[in-house]
Image (tube, rainbow, N blue to C red; front, top):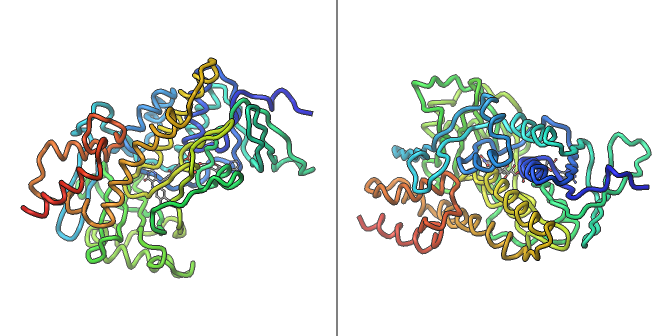
Length: 414
Ligand code: FAD
């Protein structure tokens, strides 16, 4: 028997940022929403540096006030560091209008806060409930396992539509064979949190630091100051470069940090606050971000690379676009999910892709450190680094590949 609680307008798989924001937006539109989350919150997640563009979606979802009140580390830009070169972007100085500041967040706290907001707005959120399979179509059905149910029989959820926000769990891509090859090489990250001891006088905590290894230009580090004297620090490189037995990861990350002079100075001896974690092969793609009765949000769709902290912003943008399309569909309009969801979302993903590709070839690094860059070009780039990767008034959004190639040539000539 299916209880009424298991018949909803929209079922959402996963309670990360994409799922929570989609749930809140749907509740605002008066829809019944069920969020199924296999873990219990708070739970650790990586992806701590937000981009200012994401603030607009948090605001739209009625979550901004709670985020501002939570006491996260304020953020207004990014420092890029390589050898003796430093290039700092202030996101308030950018081409696109809109938020120029945001936060650096402990994701356990941030994600819990967002999903609590969605629950307060009336979403039914169930933790410890794992989606196991789905029947697609006009009336999709999910098979769900409740870990508290000792019979292990599970139950069914009937929805008018399903949003897969399962992140790296990639529930529907795996169940429905939607995976497509990603062009991104297999990279990995080693990361931890440190007690940083960095005073605001010694270092601008309001910016993420992205530091390139002094001799290996495709090896880079993040340092994300968090509230309470803690920083997130990680190293990204090819999977082979970071391949080490678990017991050796701490030593490897410590050695790499000491090889980069800025990080060595700031946190070379800082105590690690948790075991070093490893994540690899995270780049992922799908043929389509939608299908009969479902759409894929955030990381359940496409994920590129961590270097420009674009993950959460893309996730929230996907929730915003999917809910807009869904509302039109629920109101009786015919929605072409390809042109109204997939293509518009991928527009910004492709902007980031052009930047990510050229980061690893070193071309974007040349552009970023070029000392004679015009203020106009810096403001175009600053806007994209701030997450405004969909703003078609920015030529680096409309034609990122050609623009970056031309700009790189200029930086080489002079
Ligand atoms: P998630 O936050 O992953 O949430 C998915 C949820 O779905 C999880 O809670 C999971 O438990 C649940 N789930 C999975 N399977 C099931 C199931 N079967 N049933 C029910 N629930 C399920 N992004 C940034 O914006 N800034 C950064 O600085 C940044 N740094 C990164 C660094 C690294 C090394 C990596 C790999 C990524 C980074 N990202 C960053 C990306 C960021 O982690 C993701 O883009 C973001 O978390 C995606 O959010 P989401 O809501 O799509 O998925």
